[in-house]
Image (cartoon, rainbow, N blue to C red; front, side):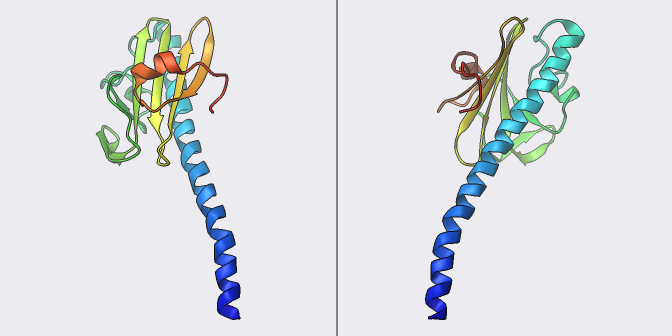
Length: 147
């Protein structure tokens, strides 16, 4: 009887725990994108252009060094990336498209790709897509919030 009760409790608790873990992984990816956007906007405010808000050593890493940035066409990975902040990190694919447009994509550990795009005149848009690159985020991030 005791084993049966423990089994029932595990059957109830396990799905709840796994759901909470997935939500936490997704929120971490979204948080990283918001932090990268703040860094990009800081650079835009200083220079009136997003051109320098890229993955180079003189780009976003100078404002927000705790994140791992990769070039626009490089797919974001949930873990194992090698970057200035160390290896094993998740990467953010960034795309400073024009002087007034910037986008990024980040793969969460739950295998969902989140995207964010900022245009100086139109504001910030969000999205999700299977192709997790900054280049894809430029066209796919069209929603008003993360899906």
